[in-house]
Length: 94
View (cartoon, rainbow, N blue to C red):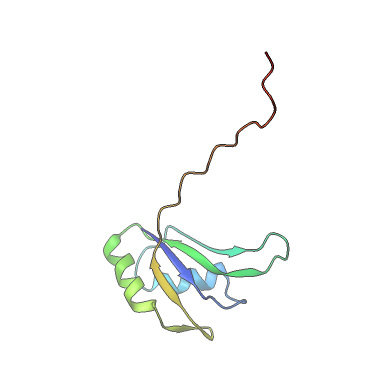
């Protein structure tokens, strides 16, 4: 299950987030999202846990709790919408 974690502190690292969720079970992947231009955290991230029961427990146990000075918002991630295909805006040649 993919979990969305919001309101992370600016200094929270991917390793910090992984350690938080590994208390509840196996973590397949973990990532704090960084701004491409500034290199700073966007204060949210994603955690993937393969066992749904462990993931649900992690969500319940971490949502609205303080972590590194911030109160987290944690929930099951919604599936991303398929990206719109880019259309060629050039006029078609006959």
